[in-house]
Length: 446
Image 1 (cartoon, rainbow, N blue to C red):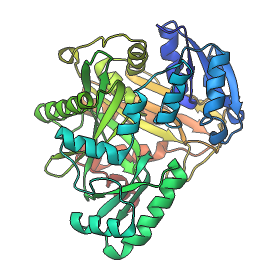
Image 2 (tube, rainbow, N blue to C red):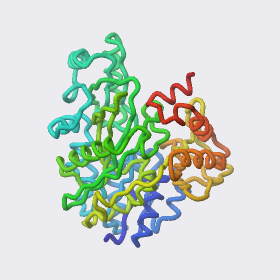
Image 3 (cartoon, rainbow, N blue to C red):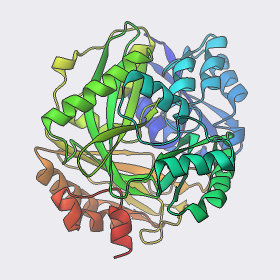
């Protein structure tokens, strides 16, 4: 096992990793920008290194500075968390070249499955059900038009290196295609440094369901069930739950088997997520793979009892999986609400100083957060300030528990999405479990 790990991230996920390391007896090194000097994760790490100014390109995405921090502090491994450099194959290669273990998949895994178009081509070879669309990258206006006509409108243009809902644009009419295609390329270039895009059929009322997998270096692979991530706004997830209200045991086995087969096909190592789009007839199609830990991983931990971050670390250290597929058991129901520093109605960022902070508690309630009274939410990064997770014996109890926990959650000084989640949990569609990725738009624009 490692003696010391550097966490190449910030906020709640950095604190989450620090906690896992402490329980494993591993020393931690936190990196931080000048905007995060007072962050909670910096305080709780064993060591800390400032890697640059607030701009993430000069700090949390600054590979030379991060590797220098790891070498100076004698860290044997780096955990990238999610976002920033987590799906950067070059960073994983640079870690290897420096003799530092990258806690995640191999550079080849990231380069193949982190590129959405390459991943789709690979999954076709694997026999995975695929979303109708272009076979690969669409490079020109003519190729975009030809692909769109073949698929049929409406279509969605996606960035090959995309993630987090960025670089995605829906086109409903042929007349809108060229301008939208050019804007998507520009957005992809600005967000990811890569302007490559591809085209898929756009489904009007789909569910977004993902399967969590773990794979060790000996070739053993297991899945930990599904997460329903259909509550989204502009492709940004707001609430996740497991198990999905629409997935029965038969469908779960089919999706799980497909995910495991895909992971084995590409010799994948460590934690990852296979994401599916499910149509109104419950047919599922491969969308993409996330080659990292997911923001919503806690709900899977709550229902399976498996600490995914610890498993990531153990796998990177060369240990075998601690569970077989038969030993994986999903118990009860778990829901996660992402509490963002945003206006609940307009979803406009609301950075600033938190004047009061009181987190909910009680049985089955978990808070993953780096916020506290007196903390100033910086304007430079993702707006998630807390993840509120609950676990109940069934979905009804989980919803009731989440509603109670949201009522207890006090954050003052800035605006948050707590009020939105209260409203969401009372909506008839959500209560019935009969909703799609359009639910949030329907609530905001009745």
